[in-house]
Length: 213
Image: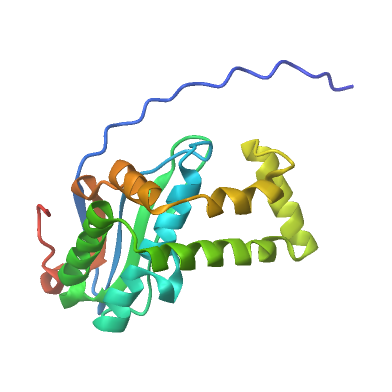
């Protein structure tokens, strides 16, 4: 006996302008847990695909990423460090996360800032760009290689209104991203000057610098 009712119109929600902030939580820990980031983009943003490639190079590509290469491989200061854009129907977040020993927290935070600024100023090398696109396109079929994954994939496609031809469109959208696009979206959507920084650590050892550059 249920009767369909009208769907209420989509609301419009204001978002505060990004502003830098440091939140320090004191815990008796040997390692600092750090999350830093700022407002991101919505899933329907036309720059989503360029951002996906750019973030893969910066910190989303595991051992292939710049952050992992700098912080883990070169300095040995973290087991894992990663970045991601989490887009939703409304703007999500851009975030970088890692754990390191308390006394190294400032150094790793500075390394993250340096790599973000480097991406903004220099963009990506051709080899990085091609490797990122190759991985993102080549690994795409693994997202739908089981019934559960197919169900999740189709639900996401429907939720975000991506269209049933999305499975054919995605590789082409990634492939057409070029170096100029990487630099443009990095400059537009990365805001190191407005990072919100949350540090859970033994603060007497971490001695987090505030304010940060």
